[in-house]
Length: 275
Image (tube, rainbow, N blue to C red; front, side, top):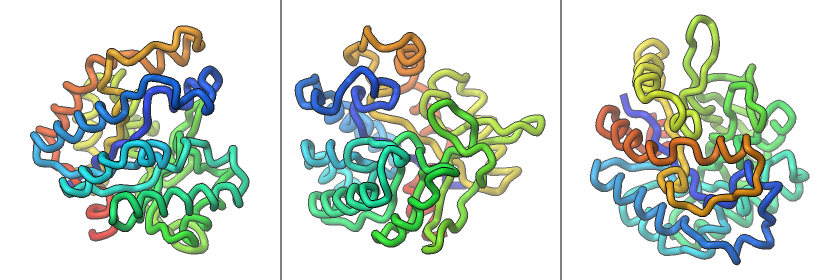
């Protein structure tokens, strides 16, 4: 079974864990590593002959349009991650609409391709922000992958659907991040920090169980900064944030390569929209 391979294209200083330490106004003055890291990700995908969906920040695309051109040239899907990695709940519906419209137009102009997908910063569509599905549908989105149906201190919708479904008045397809059931408990198996911290064997087992027992595609997501153990450190950030962000960065690339060898992967649109 083909599974969904996704990358959230943002730089190390744009993550929610450091939102209280690094101001948006300072981003341009920091060392940027997203271009180098995203190109390295695409090199890795090319080696393994896989295609992926790149949920790209408008802020990144505006500064590094060559990344989008390469994504298109190599057959990847470009989708939106919003403009500045702002959580949905931190915007009014009107602000969210403006952000959604602006980013879609920018990505399409720079890439020359239609942008149908969206992923909210920090999976911030939840029970309080379900109105976002209607805005996305009205603004021409076909699907969203913005809900993580688990409990987490930064995001999550524990009672949410585990697999793709039609959401909101517009019927946009929502594709939640992967989870697996073990002893009646829902566990995350979608990637990111959990993928760095937990043994690879757990993910191999979880994805196979989702494919075999649930009869559903699994999803892997990660960020370009997660394969960059030499990135600048934010020493003033809280210990919890530093542990969450920096733990096992050196192991991430090897784990991704194992996953690319052992499973079938493809773009979000081809799996969840084309059937």
